[in-house]
Length: 246
Image 1: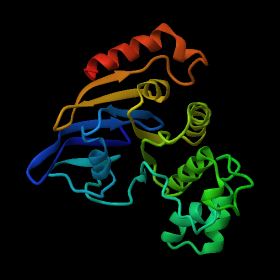
Image 2 (image 1 turned 60 degrees about the vertical axis):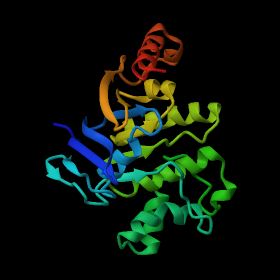
Image 3 (image 1 turned 135 degrees about the vertical axis):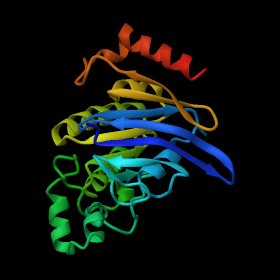
Image 4 (image 1 turned 180 degrees about the vertical axis):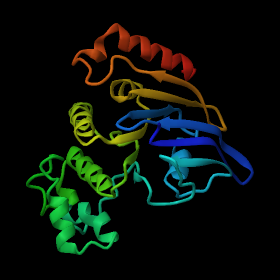
């Protein structure tokens, strides 16, 4: 039984269709990717899943509950980390707990308990401008986790990182979601990233955007360190390029 699914979701702006008949499913503990060119409606779909936008048609389900149009039921990390520059890293991370009504001392204590696991130990009193790109992403991911949902939506979470930092963050994040049992959907334009991280890849194409294909990536996680140089990896990459008409 999927932990999250959409059924036949469509959305238009000013009578112009943006996405059409989108049905996807996320299993518990799974990491899936939405991959497509700019303008295919990936972020619009995330806005609908997160409850920011209502669909024109279709429904969103969390387990068996309808959550269509209900904000706050899934965690959502947008493309920019949106860390507040005037708050310390600890207070930035604790913000979801404070919003839920947890007293600030208790919220700080709960957030602090996760700092080692998220690689943020020693950064508690720093400000976002004092952090590297990788550390900022770790802080943003912890804040997303503390929203408390079983499902996380990540919109291009690693796009601002350089190649070496991105590789390290990929390994760290895969270990983290396995440890925490997190279920994640992420958006990327990076074909290599989609193949390296995902259990399954949904290919979005066209205007309005549609899910045209679904690829299951083998072997399962954890994958060999040299997977990105394997013929199997290159086979997936060639197939995705073909499906995206690149």
